[in-house]
Length: 212
Image (cartoon, rainbow, N blue to C red; front, side, top):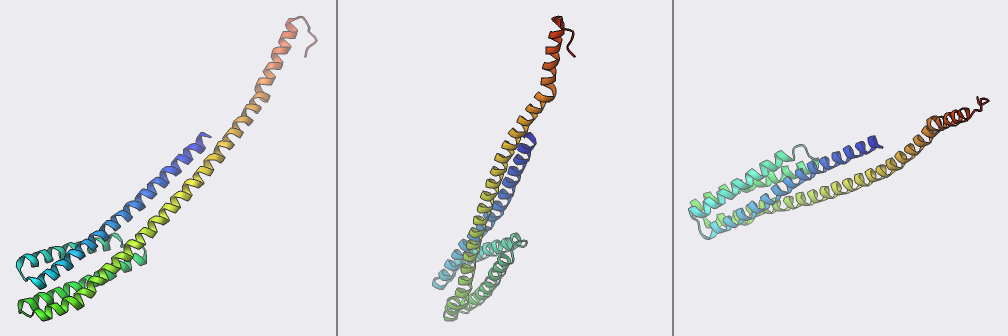
């Protein structure tokens, strides 16, 4: 019984550790996806701000969030490098869309430097906008995938706990059965013979020497 309980405890600790690892990884990926969406929103905001007012402040802010987005996407790609093909494909798509956006920003800034606001606006509403939409839609797919995987982990953990509970109950009953059997065997092999010996000794002590 003790051995069974120790095995069960080790199984529970293993399950708990595995769940922690998976949830930790998913949580990090969700955080990075949220960072991508936030940086994307701020990036789009400052692109629009540039169309209204082309100044150093808006350019610096745009550059800041471009860098944050680049770093978040790069980190996400590294984190999911050993994940499923689906997740790696999403990371690749986001990287491609982000590269398209960065290329479009260079053309937009060049157009603004030439005082060609019409071209800058056209690029903003076409190439840059399409790239932004692509990043946003892919990040939503990533969040959906992560939620699905968390649900899978939850179900697997629940099933594992239920199986462990069943094993625990079986082990308890088996342990009780073994204990009862051991008591019976001890009674038959040791206690009963001792009682017989004592009874015979008492009989002999009373003067009856016919006892064998």
